[in-house]
Image 1 (spheres, rainbow, N blue to C red):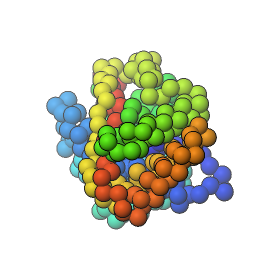
Image 2 (cartoon, rainbow, N blue to C red):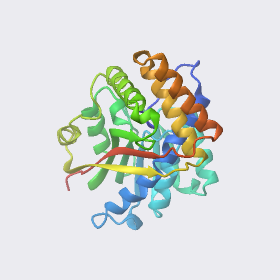
Image 3 (spheres, rainbow, N blue to C red):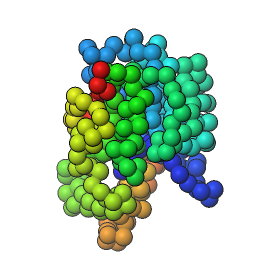
Length: 284
């Protein structure tokens, strides 16, 4: 339903809650980072990359992971939120990569300061938030060196969290939550981000050799504390987005599920979530 990206909020916004959600999102998708970096071989040797850009970095969970997987690279983290960049700086220091991570406040929808040519530009769960995806993709392409690699993670399809025989699944409650939240997201964004023709946008932005695949990342039962908090927040975020379309029975059952995750009384929940991964290159 969401990920790290550009953030525009007023002074009344609950930053602490947002930061926690973004950090949980990042931690849950960390297994994908290694898999994606490994898949870039043999065209790109991570050990030889000198500059990587994380566009829409949020609080920096993925940024610091990129620094580990590109051990010789300077990693430039771009976000429009000063408070999130402060969080990133603290994380980079705690993770021992502060010397190679540079935080830059920039709105990728408007202007990006001049940066050294990048071997990789990484954009995770951010492009679907922008008003003009092609313009933003063209701007991000400009950060790449010739033949540099663009990596884009986007929304995909279903999320499975319980065995088929569980009442929430067998009775259709979880599916109704997903459908209601997906519809609400489509209305909020103004387009179907899941089914969008991203390869065409990448081509219009001047990128070539696009690959487009859907992958599943898994966290098996019993979930650890991070997984339980993430799934509880996911369920409640769905209720906030699409709860008006659900019955009182569904609302009660889903809130009880979220509460059980938080207090650790559900040990059968898991996460099998899809993400769409696209890669492309700037022409040589």
